[in-house]
Amino acid sequence: MERAKRNAVVAIALVVLAVAAARVEAQQESEVKTLVKHKNGKKYCDKGWECKGWSIYCCNLTITDYFQTYQFENLFSKRNSPVAHAVGFWDYRSFIAAAALFEPLGFGTTGNKTTQMMEVAAFLGHVGSKTSCGYGVATGGPLAWGLCYNHEMSPMQSYCDDYFKFTYPCTPGADYYGRGAIPIFWNYNYGAVGEALKVDLLSHPEYIEQNATLAFQAAIWRWMTPIKKYQPSAHDAFVGNWKPTKNDTLENRVPGFGTTMNILYGDGVCGQGDVDTMNNIVSHYLYYLDLLGVTRDQAGPHEHLTCAEQVPFNPSSKAASST
Ligand SMILES: *[C@@H]1O[C@H](CO)[C@@H](O)[C@H](O)[C@H]1NC(C)=O
Ligand SMILES: *[C@@H]1O[C@H](CO)[C@@H](O)[C@H](O)[C@H]1NC(C)=O
Ligand SMILES: *[C@@H]1O[C@H](CO)[C@@H](O)[C@H](O)[C@H]1NC(C)=O
Ligand SMILES: *[C@@H]1O[C@H](CO)[C@@H](O)[C@H](O)[C@H]1NC(C)=O
Image (cartoon, rainbow, N blue to C red; front, side, top):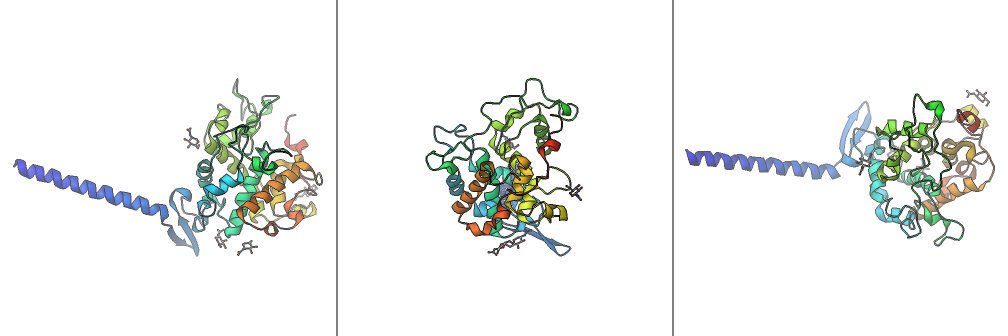
């Protein structure tokens, strides 16, 4: 009787072990295995953590397939030097963790490998130029200093716009100064990003300068999301999903890197001719293409690369709602 019981316990224990082992195996497999299904003549894939959920984009390479730690280190080689302002904050893992949320939607997974690498270079070109502390005489050249900052250094105001007091009310004591990889300013922008990422950034805008994954998520969300309905996102304008209207063509807005600047910064950067603020962003993009081994002629002709002659999508007189 006793022995039969003991044997039964041993048998159960063995079964449990076997089940656990099978589970581990399945997990390891799912890290490398692409699940595939076909529906209505289209192919959908799921690649586990980096490209999760059935998506046509997950059938392609994912970002870690063509963009690795050493490349991130090359692009942002000075970010941890002692004079940088966000030492130890930004890293490759946080970028990849953030990107994973958007790869099923096409971020870095659209088109062939060259297009994919170009999109990562373009997105990071914006990031690098907006977080750089490299000036003309900086060691390694001015372009080596991307991800030097993670927030605005001397904010002159708290960026609370009362016009949005019902939709995105400011939290007493909170400041909505520039933070992040493509810096976010103003309560309404913190509010919109927070809503999308399901993080209460109106109460805690400081999260963006405390958590690099969140900071990258916010920046990629901005890249992937139109500013206004019926306008393209920077992603769509860059990868060619967007088809310009007649008006767009008349106003020199063509698919390419130039239009991503138009979308993200409007007349702060575009339609001003060959100005430094614009050229600085373009230079970061081209520098990153070089470092990733993508030849510059892939970036297209000058008028696709810049927005010098483009009419802004959202002129600031109209965009600034209350000032
Ligand atoms: C996947 O990659 C192929 C070629 O590498 C490309 O033609 C195709 O457009 C890509 N799929 C998507 C959904 O972008
Ligand atoms: C990748 O796609 C781009 C845009 O569609 C195209 O111009 C380029 O020739 C393609 N490159 C390769 C290697 O197929
Ligand atoms: C940072 O943000 C990410 C994305 O929202 C979240 O998953 C993670 O838990 C956060 N890390 C910490 C330490 O709060
Ligand atoms: C085209 O541009 C003109 C002038 O900027 C504007 O009045 C008009 O509404 C635009 N049309 C469309 C369809 O956007």
